[in-house]
Image (tube, rainbow, N blue to C red; front, side):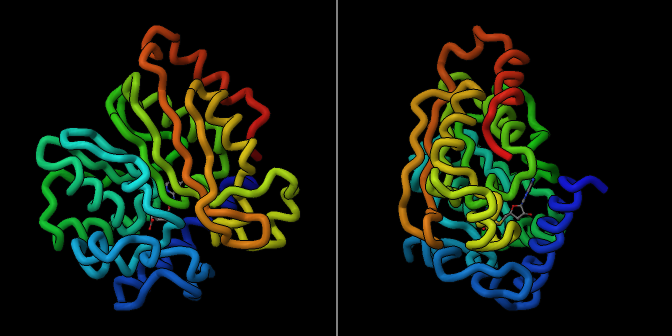
Length: 269
Ligand SMILES: C[S@@+](CC[C@H](N)C(=O)[O-])C[C@H]1O[C@@H](n2cnc3c(N)ncnc32)[C@H](O)[C@@H]1O
C-alpha cells in the first residue's frame, strides 16, 4: 500500500473502533482508546436544545470540533451534504432545519459509522435523510446538485485536500456555499510542529494552516473565503469556522478547468 492509502486505512480503522464503542454503549469522545481527543471536541460544542432533539447515540458519537449546522445558516427546502458524517449528528440537525421539502445527505467511508448513522436515522424518524458510502475525495453525487456543504472536523483527515475542495465545488449549485468546522494551524507551524501537537487520527497532525485553507479553496474556485478561529485546541492549533461561496456565475466556467486549478495548487500536503 502507498503511504497515502496506509494513512487513510489508519483513519478508517480508528473511526470504525470509535463507532463500535458507541454501539456498545460508550461515547466516541473524549479520550477514547479508539480516537484520542479531548474536551475541545464532541457534543459539548452543541447547545442543549440541539442535543435534546437527537437520539442519545447520535450525541454520544459526536467527534466534531464545532457546530457547522449553526455556521451554515440552513434554510427550509435546501439540499445539504455533510462530508464525513460519522454517527450522523450534523445530518440529523440539518434535516430538522431544512424540513420536509429539503434533504440532508451524509457521506462517510467507514462502514461501522454508517451503520451507527442509519440506526440513529431510524431512532430520529427522519425521512429526508440519506447516508452514502464513499470518500470525500470522490463524492458520489452529480455536479451542481447541493445547496450547502457542511463538514465537522474531517477535512484535516483527508490525504488529498485539493481533491476534496474540487469535489465540494463540483457538487455545489452555482451560488451554493460551504459552512465547515475544522482544525486549523497557525501559519508559522511547520508540518512537524503540527504533528508534535497531536496525531493524525486525532485531527491534529493533518491540519492545514489558515493560509493554506484559504488558498486551497480559492484555487478550487471559491470566493468570499473566511477562516475564523473559535477556540484553541492545542498550542497554535485552533478549531475554526470556514465559510466560502461558489460564484453564481460558476456554471459559465468549464468544470474541468476549475477542478484542475485546485489539483495544481501549492496548497495542502
Ligand atoms: C472526527 S470524525 C467526525 C464525525 C462527524 N462529522 C462528527 O462531527 O461527529 C471523522 C469522520 O470522517 C470520516 N472520514 C475520515 N476521512 C474520510 C474520507 N476521506 N472520506 C470519507 N469519510 C472520511 C470518518 O470515518 C469519521 O466518521
